[in-house]
Amino acid sequence: VLGRMLDVHQRNGLSVVANGISGKGPIVEGNPSLGRTVDVIPARGINTLSRVSLDTNNDGLSAIEPMMEYLNQDTSMNSGLFANFWAQNLIDTINRTEYLSALYTSTSLQYPHLFTGSVGEKLGVVSKMIIKNEERSVNRDVFFLDMGGYDGHGLSKEILQGNLPVLNRGLTAFYREMTYQNMLDKITFVVMSEFGRTITPNTSYGSDHAWGGNAFVFGGQVKGGQILGPYPKSFDNTDETNIGRGRLIPSISWESMWYGIANWYGISKFEEMNVVLPNNGNFGCQLFTDKDMYTVGNNTISGCND
Picture (cartoon, rainbow, N blue to C red):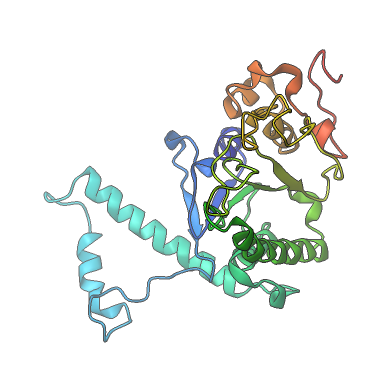
């Protein structure tokens, strides 16, 4: 969905970038025909081309310069479409990583000591890229990062006791940094999991795969302090959405939240929203607009909240 948002803005002439911190996911992938790739940035900084030979005693470029020149020389009878694409992609990647590396190392954070742990390190990279948004000449950014280790089929309580403080410290550092940098109003941050988990434990004191879950959204213009969507009446088997062990049938769709976020991100035209959320027409008044989710929102759905 984030990749499709960027697709719409790119087609409208904006400069857009998809960023993945230490990896990427389908959520930030766009239409391949647009030729946009995801900038994958390691959590501990940008990797540049240093060791370009298999000689472990040589960390410089000189050892393989002849080979690089050979691979990237003028087209010859031995060249072809794929070879040319590979060579151009290599050159573009080297140039891009060198640019990002210089940008990253020249950017200072106000609270660098707070960005600790796996999530904190990644959000430190995100913070630096956001701070340099104008210098990067980017109109729209999206960032993807993940945190594993939640598949707690055994000892779920201990797993959460270890993971949630790491997540909390990272979010706290990011929030403080963006507040100091006066960038919070330009950010929507979504914390979510790909699925819910059972409420009752299994025999290993763990939690198994379930269905309905929730997402946590914050940002400077987010209308916080509210729960959107019906909250379960009970977590025992008397609730009509509970199909057993706390596996809850979702009451609203994936599209419901992303509809309002897409509005805030500058997507409100009917045909553009159908690109971003192709199934949005199936959910009518269950969709949340930016008027529901943001203090500055003014989009409505006809017949629902207009």
